[in-house]
Length: 64
Image (cartoon, rainbow, N blue to C red; front, side, top):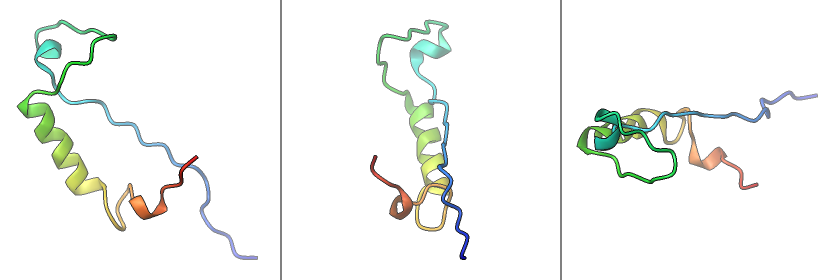
């Protein structure tokens, strides 16, 4: 019997910086956009961890 790794995987990524988070104005109910540094961090994460053969391979994601 062939054994494959079919266990679900969960990836957690903390959001990047917003102007509010840097000013200590954290708010869980307001959707504040990322600032330039936050956008850069997300882009860097995607470049290194999302894609064919990487941690998050879109071809291997399942729609539940």
